[in-house]
Image (tube, rainbow, N blue to C red; front, side):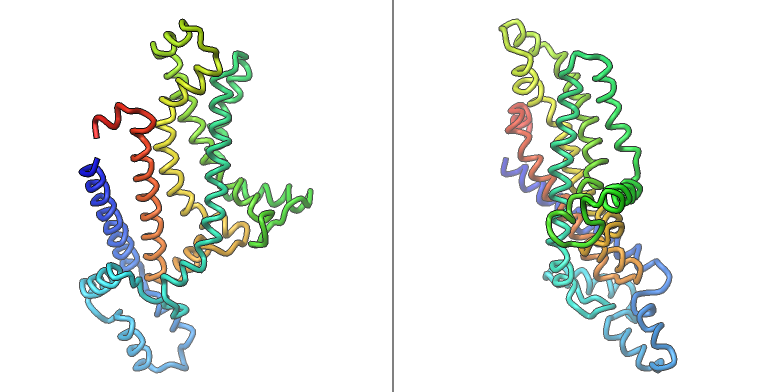
Length: 310
């Protein structure tokens, strides 16, 4: 197990380095840079010498390899640089926006797991064929609906027509409900689809027939025997979904005018604020790596055969 953990930690380091490098190269290849956009508004008031001095201060006049080396070295030391637009440290900027996004993604993840799991269990438990077909079609519908469209629909109906929940802002739990539902819908649909298929396969396994022959009831077979083995693929998918939710917050926080990492990322991309974008990319990669590691450590608890192969 110790060797397995070491390998996983090394893989995590490689993932973070790759995320940093790819984001750096992609942003460097974009036309213009954040300081050019910022200083563009000072044309006529700032001299070329002053502009060159600012660019030198941020190291943008250095060759690419030197910029990369300096940025990577600072990142290894925990310094992700300063925002070219605000001048504030990137770590502090992201830390200020992170709590709102964590609350949103956490609620969305809980809704996705509970909703997706309930649909999958109901679809594979019911003996009514028509109901089972309806339940199995729900995940495909949920996946096909774009997040921004769902968000705008909820705002129009629930907020503007019914007046039940606020349409925007970060004030209280009520403002969290609609954005969380918007993010949870496609995520829950994917979990439901995978879990329903795994449950169907597990219920046809010989050990289920053995349990039936010993007199176990349907509920016990479904929840204790089939669900435990069928949950591994859904658990793997849940780890991917958890990482994707952070990126989906860019769209959802914009639609619902919520402050958070998503809106911070959208603004940073718009102004090509390289340091902030890289900080967010590293955060997303770190979240994905940590969640994936936790899921990998849970595998042996759900299926002891996995532990013997590690």
